[in-house]
Image (cartoon, rainbow, N blue to C red; front, side):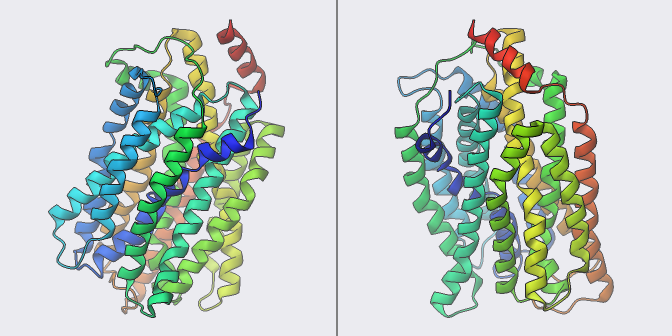
Length: 438
């Protein structure tokens, strides 16, 4: 059954504020905390890593509880509503922080924000997995999901330069505060639309699995491959995102505003190319489309090393090409995981969709947490000065450039290796769906 565009739009709408809590947090908040708020560079890296590391085990617990939830409102609605409220409180504490912020207060704000983010993200993606049992329709569902994520990224990254322009000030706090207010305003509007418009399908398979199943699911070979591929595919843009401002401002001499505008080109290209990857997946299968996107990512990420300084047009073109393949892994892996969930439901008689997507959410968080903690520690070791516009030694700049390019390419190649020979195609999923229906 084909889902209407109106339903897909309502389902995808919460991605706008959810996405704003992903890469923009990595791109904006660590440099802001390390420069404008005066926290030590290594402390900032450690905080963002440890909060995500602590938060990771909570995702499977949330997924377990989502699978066991049975209310008149449905399985997913209570978790999305509660998650949105907690996330809004955390966004306020995190984005509205002022100079004099202590590491403890920074930790508390980040922890609160990511707790709400976990509940919202896990319940939302698990809901998307059960909207349809059709192999190609799932690509379409998560194509809308990813397009909405990219639109959210595109819009939220446009907020800081607009806020600074309206305030006629280069103070980064204007931009960060404006991002926070935008996220808090978008959360009730988008989540409310989704909860009111999208219906929940009847369950397939039993849902009362045991708490011990949280660890047991990690023994499933296909799930482990999905999780490893997603970790590698998330670490790659996570590394570049954590270093993006430093690379273009310190290594290439662009202004902070110009660097932010380059990010807009990157995400705009991803937004426009998402339907292309849906068509490729429909024509050749999801895993082949995913492998090809990772191969293209390796080529274009390597090419960023030759981006010249103070040539905005050339840099913008490079960001467009880099953004085209970067969009595919996130939504194709989630569409593939829905197929894995059906295969496991057929095998075991228990539906563990929430658990599966919680595991994937946990891995995604590591993909954003590890780069900040690791790359910032390496930058400090090589003597890099984080204050944007500060002078750095040539050796520190060379180290920054290599850190921006090489790890991302190596990680993407690793994801390609993991995904080779993927066993579930359209015919396999059709048989599984038919068996579950009977």
